[in-house]
Length: 165
Image: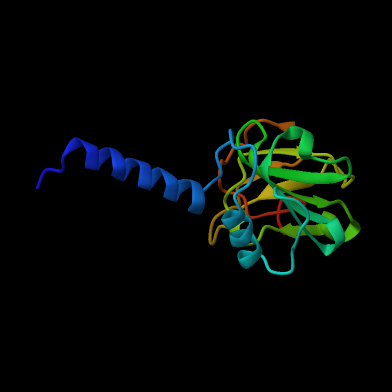
């Protein structure tokens, strides 16, 4: 059955809306949708909403900013972004002796890193973004400086010291 043109247009709008609500937030969005904030809080319990755009955990040591730019990455934090060029949602954590050993990405952040800015104080000569692969070497990338796009886009699961964990 062939749908009239206006039905195809309506279906396209509905599909586009579903992507925005249930998928990645577009880089152009200025504020986060309340449903998206609630989805993050449900997927990663224990957080506190501090604004329409930001959720924190562990007293602010772990943050998610839902419509971020590079400027959202605070000094002393490691920041990963869902889109290239430091756009979209940003997950960040404060550097600490514990987090320099290994920091696991949970829930929505597994396999979503597309750019980063390392502003923390972990030893820069051996801190890496890594991906868990069974029976294969883990793809990894040095987690130093500021990078507009990563080598293995949407593949990293954690940050840790050394080439293996």
